[in-house]
Image (cartoon, rainbow, N blue to C red; front, top):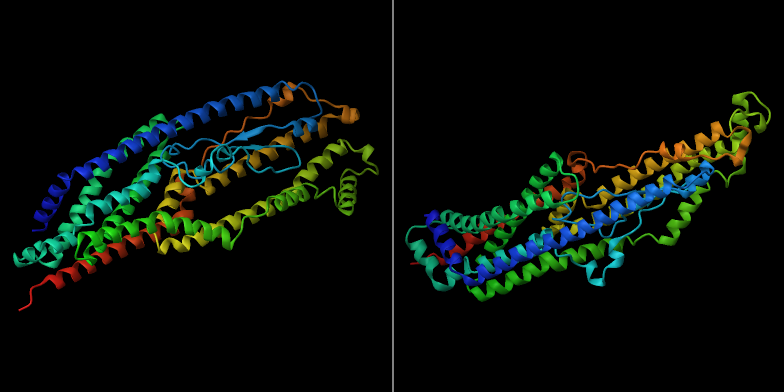
Length: 474
């Protein structure tokens, strides 16, 4: 009997011209969002390739100069593209695209594309992920608002019960119809979008990208199943189509617009953004860790003289000035790490504060998972900046040691040349596989699964209640 209910509901939905129109519009928007994303990523890839080549050319053609001057001349590290950025660009436009790897200073990432965008770019981007998380629930609610309320309003629910349909069969039929419509539509649309995104992306695509695509499909599927359950449960609460429609419209606004926005604002309100000027001062202080402590300088000099068995720095077999440059770099590292670890803890606390609102909307954990799986979230940005910092340290150490061991009596007049510049490898960072960073999203996955269980239970209980209220009494 439940199969007959599924077939009947699907037949009714297939006859709805409005639903066909809305579905077609959504598909067109999905295609348009992919095309716009592809254009953006291709432009970015060309700009990045040109910037990388120019950066290398300038570095290699800087001529002869002191290695430490070259360390200040420096190079840029550019963030690699994500294969799934076409589906969910996440924080890409708000995070820096490059890090300047200069001596004595651990620079934050710069060149944020959002700085060139309008004010509206801060609120929403037309992307496949945005459409799945925001537009798809609206389509589901429009398709299902009359699922139970319509049966009650028309009196057909009583007829079904009189024909011997029990509560479980009725729920299975209604839930199965909504789930089948959603699953079939999504299964037809998403793979094509994903394949296009992977084929068209300028980023390198490997097994990890395929795994992430499958994980993203799973997350979106769970989220849409939650929406089906919520639509069914809310429809069962009311006796008329109009009341159910208005209630689901309110649920959609709360779930996809107001609560996610409130969560983001609450996180930054309870834990305000660090003051940029104060952070800059902390970074500057970190860079002067060695030079601001005369007692430490004397101690380091004495230890070095003792190690080499000499009484004056002029007698050292190495260039003492270059040695102190490298020492200052190494002593600044813990201070830099304290500053950036503090920032990381602040941003993590903001995200955790926003996660408390996941109890009010499944769109929050779904969006977190979407960005994380796509590799376009803050966690992946942090792996990039950390890799750039390690590369910076290697670069500065190479230059300082060349100065230290080869300057001899030349001192500060010593110069490196293209042979030295060519010894430094280009920055080549690949985003980590999903496995090593998956733990950062475990809480979101558990919350989303809890939402699924609660939503199905919510729908089952309310459908049962509606059935009991329609049972004829003697």
